[in-house]
Image (cartoon, rainbow, N blue to C red):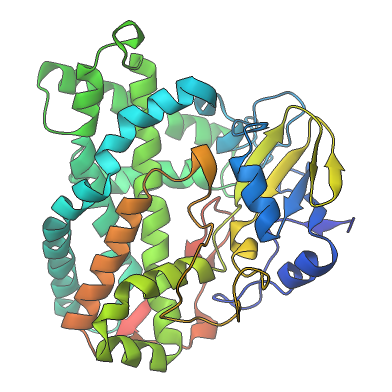
Amino acid sequence: MKQELRYPIPSDAPLEPPEEWAELRDECPVARVTLPSGDQATLLTRYEDVKQVLSDPRFSRTLTAPDAARLSATGDGGLFNSRLAQIIPDGGEDHQHWRRLVIRWFTAKRMSDLRPAMTEMAERLVDEMVAGGAPGDLRASLGFPLPVYVICAMLGVPAADRDRFAHWSDTLLNLTRYEQAEIEAAQAEFFQYMSEHLAAKRAEPGDDLLSELLAAGGPEEGGLSELQVLVTGMGLLVAGHETTANMIGKMVAMLLADRTRWERLLADRSLVRTAVEETLRMDANPGIGLPRYLHEEVEVGGTVLPRGTTVLCSMAAANRDESVFERADELDLSRKPNPHLTFGAGPHSCLGMALARTELQVVLEVLLRKLPSLELAVPAAELERVEGLAVGGLATVPVRW
């Protein structure tokens, strides 16, 4: 297997994948890589291998075993290795029970009900960006605030606290930027905030996910423990805004990088849904990918992985596998079917996928309608990536109209 490959693999172009992805899929689909912590892990880049591992219960989601690779050099090894990651059940019936309690708030029907409010919010944010004058930063003006407002409403958390959430998310998700003391301080603040929020919800329940989880009672009544509800709230607040906020910016940048794509969408709005799916597939800056820990020896891609192996599933590299996607490196706005792995696969697939899809579709519909002349204010090659995040994104998305 290929040696001395550092991961995440850097890319010279902000919207393009590193050249190594194609080389790895062709020559070394099961590769040894060195993480920011200095620990070694196994990287998978082929579609079938990634799908197999994500669907296989023998690969554990929680990286708390003593011999699991640490993603970052901090004392707790990063978010996936931290004590917080152990609170939510990792697998089996306990995990499915947790998932059933939470996913009721993320169904396609509930997203459809939320859609008008999302649209109104997106229109207001676009109007505010336009009022501020061109060029504007689409990530700061729309990409970040919209998902925060939505997830805050679902959790019954004040959106006015969004800047604090942004800081806490960044410290939890960044693998290289913060010292251990800063991470621990942010976690303690976040934990205290959610504790106080849950106490307020117990006193005055609302029509929100956290109130419903508390009302379900503890484990003996078929609900979750107070600590599990608290960590669920923290996790959803981070996951519910960081990933989609970044993806909104990347989606718009991808569609504007080649003006013919935007023109085609203006001419045919029925392509919005397939365009969203294709930009999800083509995301070349997704972050670290999904780590898994192996409790027993398993064969993947013709390679026997020993017990104790930490595996990194690169869904983004798998999404460009020519054996599954015809013209895999081309962005095709009308691609169907599109079985991309951006939201994972199996029992741990992203429970917020309907929410993310709805937010991305709403953003695209509103921008096409209100700002048909939208364009990037800098060449696509000059866009700046956010480095070090477990979730990848662009620092800014400068636009004019």
